[in-house]
Image (cartoon, rainbow, N blue to C red; front, side):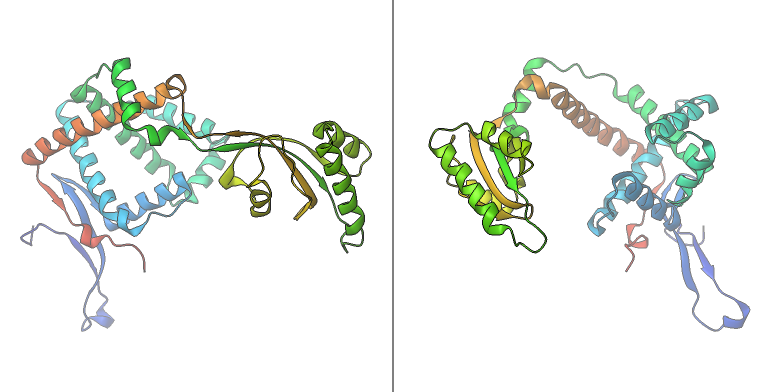
Length: 317
């Protein structure tokens, strides 16, 4: 290596521009022994993350991507030491599973989909192989962590807010649609007021709504249980002060003249243990694996030649 930090730079210079400063086009961001990841490799990982999540990677997460990449290369080196191998058939099966998950039947369409993210089938197979090796190294080095029900219940007690259901409101509604020029607005408002008066006099809201819908005068029915923050502003305002069983005055919505009835208000509560036990188990297992993996990687970094240069990998400007 020619530099103290063993950085490799690929420089772009042409004879015609020989007197101008050379421009950095590629740099080694991560090196673990003889394994390297360049700026192009890291940009590809950003593209993969975007394709996977549908969201751009925030600039503040770039250092984390570099760190995770270094950890992965360490695990791959450990896989070589442990003589862990993944067969071509296993990789092919993983590719097929991806195709099934993405509902892509033929290989040509799948390859085209990959190309749209800047990845080839060959590159995908390499990434899948690496992922499978890392998983096997983890399984070999970390082992199993028995988790008791009591530990999971304690985790739920410590993290109740993560598993809290928001307050909900159970609504029924009716909408009288308006003509494009609103010329029937007075008529529809009068029909809505008659329905409200009938309900407040003891009438059955849904039965009255059914009559209106069967006469093709309105649409409506049971809206079910809704989170308050998911309601449109005009509906949220209309039901804000209503008690269970009460019906709103008619109001305008995007759909027309609207009336809503509050069936029930459901207070915020922590989800039952039985409904979140598997999520709790996965979180606990992931946390234990992550802690154990951190220790393993730190030990490997003491034995391997590891260089990380996040400054060479910056978000596009």
